[in-house]
Image (spheres, rainbow, N blue to C red):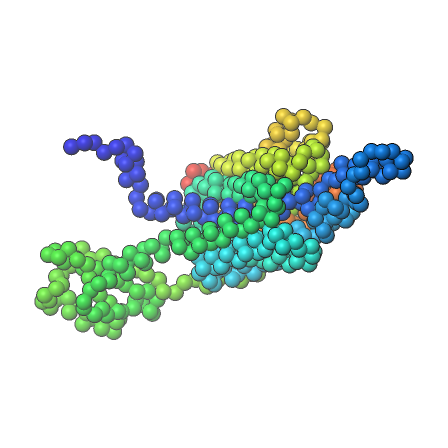
Amino acid sequence: MATVPPGIRLLVSFDRDQWYRAFTFILTFLLYTSFHLSRKPISIVKSELHKNCSSVIELATIASSSGDSGSQLPSLPSFHTDMDCSWKPFDKRNYKQLLGAMDYSFLCAYAVGMYLSGIIGERLPIRLYLTVGMLTSGLFTCLFGLGYVYNIHSLGFYIFVQVANGLVQTTGWPSLVTCIGNWFGKGRRGLIMGLWNSHTSVGNILGSLIAGYWVSSNWGLSFIVPGLIIAAMGVVCFLFLIEHPNDLKSTYARNSCQGKSFPTKSWNGINGQTEVYLQYKDSKTQAYYCYKDSVQNRKSYDTELLLPRDSVCVPMQPTVVVKRESEPSAISFMGALRIPGVIEFSLCLLFAKLVSYTFLFWLPLYITKAAHLDAKKAADLSTLFDVGGIVGGILAGVISDKLGKRATTCAVMLLLAAPTLYGFSMISEFGLGPTIGMLLVCGGLVNGPYALITTAVSADLGTHKSLKGNARALSTVTAIIDGTGSVGAAVGPLLAGLLATGGWNQVFYMLMTADFLALLLLLRLVTKELCSAKAHPISAVELKEH
């Protein structure tokens, strides 16, 4: 007999639960990657909505001067203003404010909707809720691109699309964090969540590459293609997403009891709180039978088992499966706020996300203006910031797992991020090599705390010991933390658009100030972590239960 190949031996070494856990990890990763993939195009297309038309203006000046001197130079096309090479209504001098207003409309709607999304998501099936959100998000993303196809120049149209898209995109984060939290426990949560949260940067990278491919030739496709991708992933979500491991267990329990010709009876446990299923194995047919009876008839049920039957024998090893009928009630908004640490981390994320989303929406345009690159090269170069973000998020998770100090890990990275931001503001004076290095380091330090708070910290707080095992609080806690952070995400790009008119240095001063404020908000939690570590050295068991 031939030996089993080593690859097959590796595959069969994992049990069914491990395969489903890995499948859920990969699927939820891809689902939220598509969310960020559809958000990125607006930052890539900005430089195309308002082009740098200095060369056009120079040609127009030459043409007018040659006409005045009466020279016999060939006549040049009529050039009026730089409005001719930009997309109306973003062809005006206040184009930065208009672009900032578009960002603000999306992010403000996202912030408001996030608070409601977590509460709604706890009361609806996650799979259906997420599917509807992804399909509608794909629709509105495509609508923005159709503005190019149908030559739409109304600012109101683009604002409406951004607001609608911001609202429906709030279905993603609370739902997916709840789902991944259901499948993975607290052991090594920082590492697992750090790896999983890299979907943010992967989505930004893919969005930049896809949008950058068409930005110069047909920027409408920069939105339409990502819109189709997230809609397609919504269909995949509907077909394959498993919300909770217990969903599989209940499915297997039902399947084992189906296809039997005899009627089944049911009985409830104490106070009707549980259902108890008894499985009996027939030694002849190797079939399983499930019986239920009422609690009042339990005595007669026991007697019935002693009577001779043709199709049933007395069980040798009965299996009892307990299924809870009553689930814990969803936590209230104020109840979630009273969980220790929720307010501090929420406000810290407000400023951390302000910095991260300012880079998300303005980095390609800044590189275009500061480094004097075209839109496609700027889009490609900006992906390095997200590559650094992947590494930073994973490192933050690993370090916080090792030390057992989430707040301290975030604080150290925030402290290092501020001087790095100042160095990045001098990008126009660097060569290509130092610029690439600064993008990677800055991306890691900016996105590390943001990734840690929105994933591992949210999951820790959503399963805090004060909740007494009520796992349904996870979606609401996640929505509160990320919703508060989204307020900063809305304010950051808007302020960047206003401050950029006075020079990009003012934007970086604003970002450094936000980093310091985020650090200050964590000082109480950092002090508490350090003091508790001195009083009670953390053992391996305590780390696992944290």
